[in-house]
Length: 386
Image (cartoon, rainbow, N blue to C red; front, side):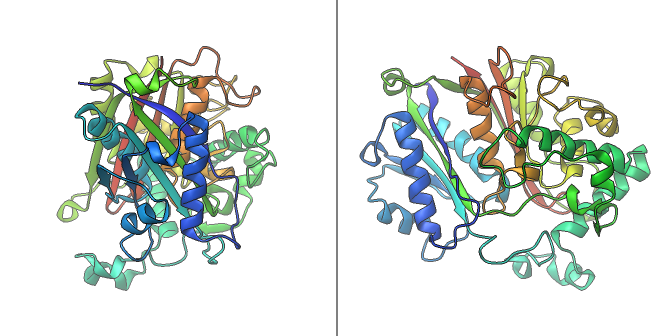
């Protein structure tokens, strides 16, 4: 089978797009990634998209950008969707379904006035379990707060340990001129910020931003003719975890299922990974995911992230060196796209010099979609520099 390479990546610089439509954000992101690759819209014959957009979404966007497609995929699993799409694009290219695949993400939740995790998720009323859950008022923040409280109860995790995730993100964001929050914060500032949903504080929560991003993948013979550094996906895993009729562990995510598949496919150990992009909707998300991805034992996540262990150049697992969703960008409330983009930057040696990981040849990107503690998706992607 033909190999597939990531040849283009672009993060939209906008964090509040009051003057742009969602379609325009998709198109501008697409053009940015294609320019980065040295390709054009006319080269694209595969398109991968998901999100909230009326009028058949991918059909309308393909027409808007005048794409001539042989293959398309609009699988939607929330924030993990872009990582899933890269995996699907790799398989499509390997099977000859397309030669150049475009993956885009865009949205305007900030311009539309959304606050952190305080509103019901769109489509919740259509979920089969909604009649039994809606009376309890589940929203994003209180469901994640419940996961955090259970993790604290079971494993002794502390608010100070959670705070270290935000501290690490802020240390990285200070070097990113596009980051929404660039001030370095302390553990004390995090735990003294207002409670949003006990035990989560305001600074335990991600930012809400407009914008988007895009990636371009190409068949090997095309990729090797381009002037860009090549990044090859070598391990891919996907999983879904739900309520399972009430048999649910609030401290375990679907990453516990997607990560082993990706690592087995890549033929790597966790210690081989030089850099990790891990979805950070809340600080507790990262604590649970570093456990489920296998970087530490279950229950040890709080201790693992403490004392700067996620800070590039300081800790043993450099993480979210763009500032992540906690400080930089969480476009369309779907952070999987930015996780891949920063991993690509690291593998290319194009991250900010202050956070660039030395000899970064293997990186991981992991995303979640939906709600931990309820029903959610996970996708794990391992990449190598060629």
